[in-house]
Amino acid sequence: MDEFIYDDNKIKLYNEDCLKIFPLIDSESIDLIITSPPYCMGKEYENTSDDINSFLSLNKKVIYEAQRVLKKGGNLCWQIGFHVKDSVIVPLDCLIYQIVEEINKTLSDDCKLYLHNRIVWSFGHGLNAEKRLSGRYETIMWYTKGKEYLFNLDAIRVPQKYPGKKYSKGKKVGQYSGNPLGKNPSDVWDIPNVKANHIEKTAHPCQFPIAIPQRLIKALSRQGDIIMDPFLGSGTTAVACIMEKRNFIGCELKKDYISIAKQRITDAIQGKVKCRPDVPVIEPDKNQKVAQKPEEFKW
Ligand SMILES: C[S@@+](CC[C@H](N)C(=O)[O-])C[C@H]1O[C@@H](n2cnc3c(N)ncnc32)[C@H](O)[C@@H]1O
Image (cartoon, rainbow, N blue to C red; front, side):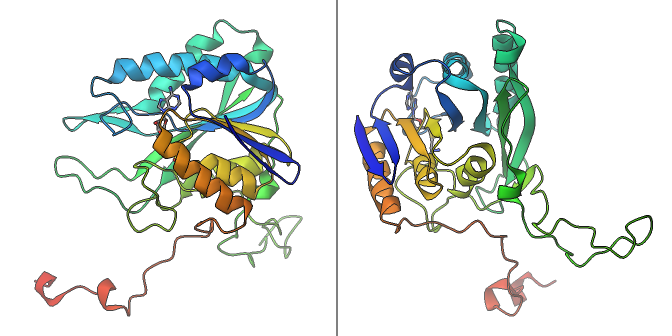
């Protein structure tokens, strides 16, 4: 186990199968779990034999354990996309929903996982499909353990499009209609994915951007809380925890990814980690040549 200490917080990394680490963690001791599991479709960190059944089997075991270690009132976020084979897709969040429903049947009401949002994470770039529409979103299933839970909306409000808008009738006529702290960011998040020239890109083939765990951490935990990512990858959730002053426990099977995570964590503690700020995606400048239609395209 590698341990990093900064301010009053600890970051613990296990280069181990998360299913071997969960039994070492006390029940109801973790405040927030954020993760993105393997999609079981031939990535370099997966077995070539992995398929939908491997996905179901792994996620059943991990979500069962995640629910056990989560505090009552704690939050659980499963970031997930599609299993694609021969141009046929399986929406993996549908399988996660079924797995949680099955686990819930064995639990008392105050320990059940309740789904509050299926957040659509949209992005403008990715592989261009030939035989179907190009995929431009994945989802985040946000659950809480029990019905009483922490949700700090003010921490993740975003600017209104028209902050100067006023009520035109009724008791509040003439007053500003928006919240001065900004608006609810909604359940559709447009955040660039981490592809080749993204500033956060490492050698890991499937990172999510820091902005995803950072928003979830801000809204669903407090400073000093303990956050876990059982499928750590390049350490993105750990980096977001350092930026938001939280404690962290992460597991990752591959030594190479642990090395990447350790470097990013060290950089984050020193305040020099590469990070795209969580700001709205800019529209292209139509005066730039690259944004203009080439003569050859005009017909
Ligand atoms: C989708 S990636 C996570 C990427 C991560 N969110 C990031 O931003 O870098 C899933 C990771 O889980 C790791 N993994 C797969 N099975 C595991 C297991 N049983 N225990 C721990 N890690 C595992 C893989 O090696 C891979 O790095």
